[in-house]
Amino acid sequence: MSDSPKTERTFIAVKPDGVQRGLVGDIIARFEKRGYKLVALKMEQATEEHLKKHYADLSAKPFFAGLVKFMSSGPLVAMVWEGLDVVKQGRAMLGETNPLNSKPGSIRGDYSIDMGRNICHGSDSVESAKKEIQLWFKDSEVSNYQRANDCWVYE
Ligand code: UDP
Ligand code: MG
Image (cartoon, rainbow, N blue to C red; front, side, top):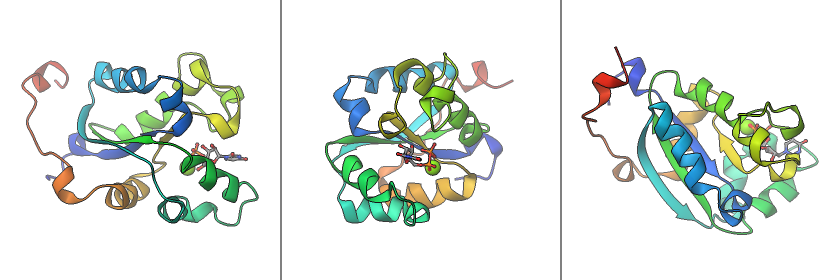
């Protein structure tokens, strides 16, 4: 992968509540329509052990055990999206952690109410995106490909 800013990558997941509520297609469509490129995707019921690694920085929080249990309670959809500023833009598209603070138009602001059922995850920095992508995907599961319409997305 080159170091072009257009190849920045982020880890986005539709959490088990988003899968149950039939929001996978909508969430994917938002990133596609924006112009971001999908480079990896899988459905998986993650183990608590795996999720404890994913949320390691939150291990001291009172909600940690419940979060890990909930996240392992059903299949989720894990994805890697690529494009200019995708980490920050992805967070903006998701909305705030607390859906009640999320603007209409954001994914959480449109589809969720409760912090513990906020339907999606997005990496919070380029550094954590790198860690999360490595945790969820083997190198061979992430596709490197040219998109024919990139000249209509980027000047
Ligand atoms: N969470 C929660 N209660 C809280 C804070 C967070 O249940 O007081 C959950 C919420 O689902 C959130 C996840 O823990 O998405 C991870 O928390 P983080 O602060 O990393 O928020 P995010 O990066 O997902 O916006
Ligand atoms: Mg976070």
